Amino acid sequence: MRILVLTPAPTPYRDPFWATVARQPGVDLLVCYLARESRDRPWRITWPRDFPYRELPGVNLLAWRGPTEACYWNPEGVRLVHPRHCDALIVGGYNHPTLLAAMWHARRRRIPFFLMSESHLKNHRAAWRSALKAPLLRWITRNAAGLFPTGKLAAEYFRHYGASDDKMVFVPNVPDVERLTQWTLANLPRRDALRTKWNLTGKSVILFVGRLIPKKGVHTLIEACARLSAEMPWHLVLIGEGTFRRHLEELARGLGIAGRVQLAGFVQPESLPDWYLAADAFVLPSSETWGVVALEALACGLPVIVSDQTGCGPDVIPTSEQADCAFPFGDAAALGARLAGVCARPADRNERLSRLEGHLRGFSYEAVAQRMVSTVSLSLKPAPAECQVEASCPA
Image (cartoon, rainbow, N blue to C red):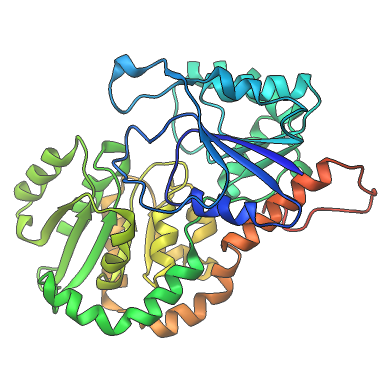
């Protein structure tokens, strides 16, 4: 079974997943990137790519708008969508001309195509954008052989544009949760030394990882921390860079908490587990489509708090913790209350990771890859009426 994947750029989360897909029995995988690197994320590609891949020549039609804008056109990628080269196509989104053209050619050449998407309806968009997208998304949901939403909110988005549940299978954007959990358990004895190294001893460390831009909601997090009791030994660590950094520094000074807010700058992905190990809680207060770092933090045993506009929230946060670990986006008072509760009850990592084991198992690379490959395989041959794909997208 020859599977062609067209995806915007390499990432430290998806690439190890593609390696797992490539190892599935009977799979001949080719991953093609529209760009050599993500323009808005300064990752160094230090991770292995143990699968066949190509970086396609092409042009960024929005390069003139600055380093964070991307709209790729790659003619070679479209030419690869042909029965001579692939039996099925998986596309990582629909926001580039290459991906849209690939889906159109796949339909025309009777090649089943599958769309991966994180989009959800809680991210507010201009009405004119939604109106322009509606006919396109209805065409995709009608003609796709299958849809791979990352979770419940993304499934709602597909349903809004006419998708039926039998077309959807849950394919979240995940880190290597098994490796992170095993690493954390093995490295717990290093926690005190790390906290001493970074002058965090005796502090309740609240951690954020992401770009410092308005939609990440870090200003709400700083305002929430300012509401915490002065007697509580909290300390906020912000990992990342972005255009909002100066504003955040001024906000912390204005609130009189600059001494408790540490801007640690960008940290390469391979070094992040040390920070998860040293922290006591993780917060992602953003309005974004998914938020893979929240699952990373959870796999390291941290309590995780997210906003109701963070796409991963309904899936990543265990059901028993939803009431205590989700808050309305932009509501600093609600977030402050959640933080006070988490900081007052420090988690025992061993106990917590033992309790999370079953929940995290569904996010393993192997489990997700098997779901994806099974779905693609079924599209290539008629299935009996009673046959259904396991682990279809949650309602």
